[in-house]
Length: 486
Image (tube, rainbow, N blue to C red; front, top):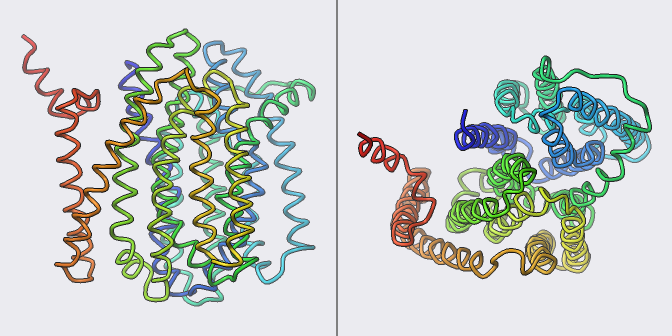
């Protein structure tokens, strides 16, 4: 299979995996919002985010470090088995320690969220055998996507079957945590025949701890403004405010799964290119990917901002209309996340310059933490929104400060300005059209269709006028080339 086709297939599978991981809980969100209300959603969000934070530490950012290590070793079966076994042994030790911490939290710290937190325990257990990083390093995205999709579809069905009252909210946590555990087990089984665990010493295994922990610092810092935001809103403001913030952020987080999916595939691909010294090819690849990501994120950000008021009312119900003012500005973090993700996964990480990533995201985390402490007491959930916007803007700025001169940032900023202008035009059209249609699902779908048509037409014209590499991805371009061939 040629490299381009393999990359497209892996990207498609990984997008499916990422989106289903977040999209299926989103499918159940309208039902859960109406059953549990603001306080119930906020309480679940509070417990889940503490659990997720523990799982982040347990996994030590292996999605980046582990994937890259497997890519470097995969051409030598003996070395591959050895590296895999070393990293997995380290993972099991760290995950077991965090499982003990989680049990301590359940027994000594948890309060009104204790029952929900107990139901989330399988998430911590799954960290012992979550080997998705190994499959990603081997470019095996299909097993991850298919198996996780199957178990999470079953989980989504279970929500509607078993949850009927606010006191059933713990079942929601149990269903999704069991689905996570089952998905990890099934994905790990897909490694059979591809790698073989071998005996490795403790010193060999823990030699990976320091470099993995360094890279993990960036993952941990990001969690400050992705996970700790909700914990801080719940602790400083109220569980009701946290419920509003949770549902506002949930849709934005779902859309960010597209960005993470593309970035994970590109990290594997560009790491292989870096090993062969294809620096100029990487720069061309980065430029094309940046255009694609900016095109996608601008469409999502401006589109969500244009329909946030109707979307929250129709999707979550009247109890969550207060999520709309939070969702609209949060949507613009997608553009910043996408920009930073391309630079990180296609330039910094393949070169193993992990400290640049660490400094960037730690700066973002510090900005977010300070902003949250200052703004949440005064502005409640909106303070967390402002803190997140400032944090996400800080990350790409700090990346630029550290690698300026290496990439043509003027060209990248021109790409950004163009897609911001196209997205802004679409927003104005969608908002104006919204005044002509009723506040119903049909009206919302009509707004989305008009926005998609306008944005697509503008992008197609732009690509043709500028001879953008994105035009070559269009299906009719391939048909035209086949016709030209004798």
